[in-house]
Length: 504
Ligand code: GLU
View 1 (spheres, rainbow, N blue to C red):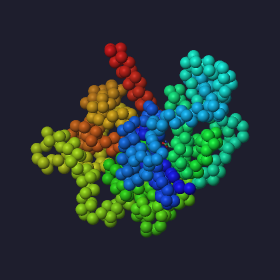
View 2: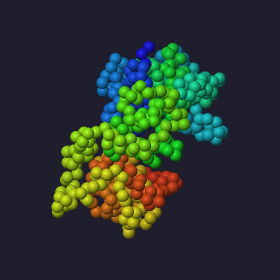
View 3: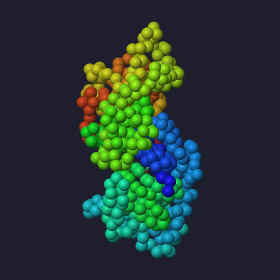
View 4: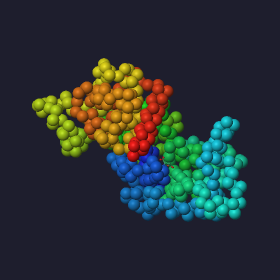
């Protein structure tokens, strides 16, 4: 049997280094067994998925040198490889489950489900569907449907006994059925949930090994049952540990950069980054840390993956990247990398119009623009402090800015400007009273080229990092402060929207 693995990202945000790690493990395993590695786009979350995010994910994984044998862009015999193009298939599968009595239509309203949740919380029992619509007769269900009552399709789940999941990394894991929810498989708009689409696709695409993040372990019992209901063989499972910081905390966007784009923007070489991720999945050989993909394929072994959590140690990445820069590039290749990184026409083309009106000599360019060619920058905390904002407002301004950086759908100067308008509103200040410390945080000085254009050009990741750095220098913000301030921002946004509607 040919080994077939896949990575199945959801295009809902920046490409995460964890996705690259999962992709790499799947790639190495497939190649080691002379198998095939697939990429499938799981875009059943219609609200959060976007084409732009998909493009960025594919680009980022390709930049790292990972090549998939089948996928939405390269095609293959089991396409389409994008779930939004396979809806027909899921409808057929759901109908099969319904007619075999393995699933049922649930007409419960959102309000009823909310009440149920509240009640379960009060009683201290795990939340989950109580099975009310299982008791409907066929006639009652048909009547509700004919009356146009919205419904979802849920899978039937035994209420007694337990199930054992076999995990290649963790051995046998047992779950009590009563802790497994009667999962929604088809939403009221007819779209499948992750669970249905994922199982159908892994079967149809002849996936033999599912290797994915450990956050999916609790879904495994549902998936196992679905395979049984369909009468299909389940692929082998391995749930990979999440990447961790050296202090063992979970890698998370709030605390440290997680986007592949950030590492690219910082000037890490793709071969160094993929090598670094590979070190978390191969037998380490002292003195032979530098490995290309082919070497990693040869040395890979699932058993090398530490369940305690692979450590994403940036100091090690720096060391490795330095070696690649010094040892693996001749001067011409090095120059080319520098050009690709930031001395290219498109980057200079974006910066030049900001600088031209503001200089007297070309030699002014160095000090004026150096922040465009840096990752993190040195900031003088005294300069961050501002006559217009007391310390609490200043910290609040940075917390709000970080919230806006994450929330903005479009990363563009006009939208960033509008976001700072909202921040000024919440602080009860004028925009120009608020922006000065942000010049310092982003450009390293209080006067520079236009702030919002600069932020657009630097990109969301570097901006987030510099804002976070400034907030730290100012003493940070407690979780409670952050929550309260972020709430103010969204309440203010809602009020502004309402006012606009009244005017309209
Ligand atoms: N779409 C899921 C994710 O984004 C994939 C989970 C799986 O591999 O089954 O992580």
